[in-house]
Image (spheres, rainbow, N blue to C red):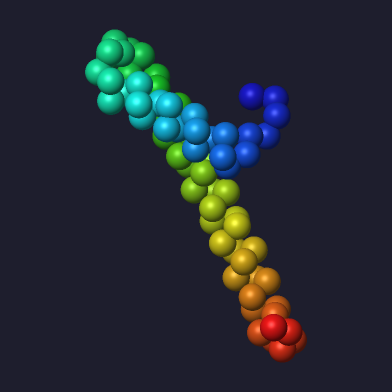
Length: 69
């Protein structure tokens, strides 16, 4: 994975994996590989959301401290 994927791309990939797993058409080995990939994507999305949350909290704290609204 050379380029840094964005949140939306990761969510789309995760949704695709879930759909494939829910279809029931994958072999056990493929299902395990898809599950593993999905867990990595999920962790990446969670990290991106946490980073965004921290930035928003930081920005709102600065705004409250300076009185800008």
